[in-house]
Length: 198
Image (cartoon, rainbow, N blue to C red; front, side, top):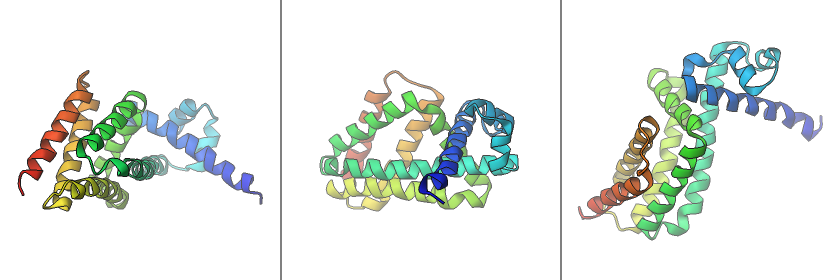
């Protein structure tokens, strides 16, 4: 079998997963049906049922895809921010700028990630990939906080990530035009406070 023949089903499934995530972002998990995904992806109903025999399989695949996608993107972001890690304010600025772009262009996908967090709270099978998501973020924040001479970089990184997740969730739920400015100020204030605990 040629490489193209192997990658074509993967591309097709990715297209279906992206369609499912947009639906989750707009309508929640209850909005996901084979028919809705087919319409969103502009493919036949049979194309969806061929890949995902049940609605549960479709929803689970979409949530796993959302989290795996986000983990991959977070790793890439963490690498791109490493050169800024030694200057905390520059690191926070770049981080917030990234999310300002993300929330303005891919809000549905991020809402779907929060749906995946809730699914992990209810069902253990989602927990490993959610834990990987948090670990990826913590490692990135820990690098910056170590560079800033935090006395407890791991614990402070956990606090930083929890705050960032809350800020992003709040922005998705109740958007503020001042988000970029406010988030930068709030995260910098948090880090300054943590560093003052030396």
